[in-house]
Amino acid sequence: MPQPSFRWAIGKNCFPQSFSRAASLSPSFDPYVFSLVDRGFIYAIAHIRGGGEMGRKWHEDGMLLNKRNTFTDFIACAEYLIENKYGSKEKLCISGSSAGGLLIGAVLNMRPDLFKAAVLDYPFVDVVTSLLDPTIPSTTGQWEELGDPRKEEYYYYIKSYSPVDNVSTCIDFEN
Image (cartoon, rainbow, N blue to C red):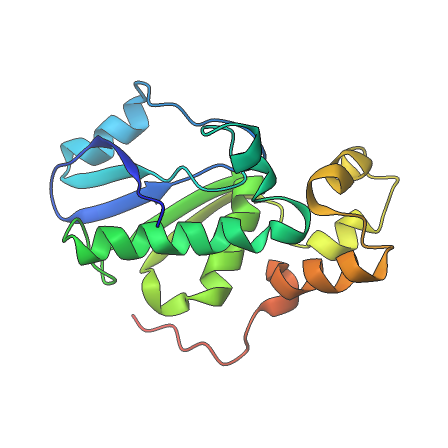
């Protein structure tokens, strides 16, 4: 099971973050994160398959028809944080932007019970529609990472995790 790497470990609120698509999210000083830590949050970086931290194979194990590994790894990291008392479902907040927003949207659909809050900054959540439009500047580059949904096997696989295509209308948001 993937384990998160921690920047700091203070307090009881928990805020894991991740980025996928071959990029590495290295620990560094961030005044916004420090502000959270100063208020008692635990800040964790989840190095999940699809990212570049563990080499090329690690990245490939989270792309194309293996993309779901990215989401299940992040969920496993969140479960690890909860099981090891770094946080709880009642206090777990997650965030992601762009491709990280795809990750957060997908895990929210897969496990809405696991997270208290989420911050999505310019998220990539309408994956199928976006990838079907080659006039969008980054679309053809995304095909190498996620697959070309004009091909049937990729279309159905991408649709199975695309956040917009999997939003439940039955979620009861309490408080």
